Length: 353
Ligand code: FAD
Image (spheres, rainbow, N blue to C red):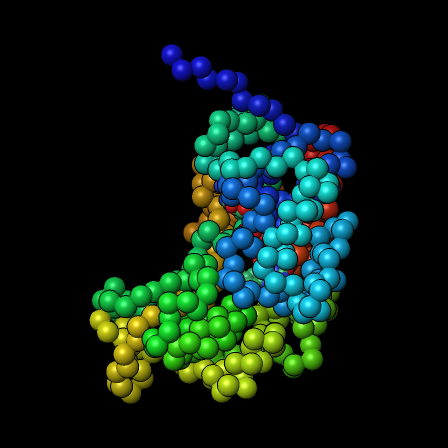
């Protein structure tokens, strides 16, 4: 008979140790509660490890920091690059001695009759008095449906899988999506390939001299003024150097969507066919919440009903870092600290009663 060890017990179990999990860890280590962070990756850095090679933050380091310790300023004075963010998160975790275990994938969370949770992972089970989900969105890329998509014999990839322009030389590449991912990937790929940029509406650009800090402060003002979707303004394109360069090369031009795919390309409104080799979907992500399906709380739109970060239907469950529905600007490095702090305070109060 295989020996089945008893599940380990902690006060708080955090699923995911990207920027959101680490911000939670920062406040948990000062709370006096026992805690553990379980992360599915081999190494620190969360989703940032999978960003493309030329990815840059859209804000300076000073406006991209987690609680307690500023992200170091890059030597080249530019906005921090992907590897700088990964390095920052790795050092942040070490600096505060956060209790991260990896690679550990949480498969399911269920509520026990005594009010605790049973957390099943690919490395055994845990019991926890409270659970915080901080699994981000990167592992759930979203692709819109287009007529004929199944017939298209060319290559399709999502921005989540894009690394660099290597391999695209000489091709005709459609980049779909109106956000910062699309603009940065278009800038990259257009150095070696013919590109067509497809957006539903004309993209909105920030003036050259402003960056993500302005988006953040505009969104903060909207939020404080009581607007319901503070995140909307965060969709504007920041003119990082690579995107400015694309503009100067004349490739930062977008067209409205095609009507359907064919086997070799796409058909534009009016019926004109055009050959396409590759489509890169920069069309966003959905929350990675499959481990919570066992609690029966995941709604048809892929979210969980919350008040702030607290699940409304399951006592002892919180969700942090998924975007405006789990707290203002919570999917940003600078914004998640506020959500994490409030969440740990709520958990302390919950466990004391
Ligand atoms: P993640 O970084 O995705 O971390 C979640 C972790 O949980 C991962 O390690 C994952 O493996 C793990 N996990 C998932 N499921 C499980 C499971 N079942 N069990 C165990 N572990 C699990 N933000 C900014 O602040 N500034 C920027 O300039 C900026 N630029 C961006 C540019 C692009 C192109 C994109 C796509 C995003 C950008 N963001 C930026 C947002 C930022 O990257 C994400 O919001 C951020 O990575 C979310 O952090 P997280 O910790 O919530 O999730």
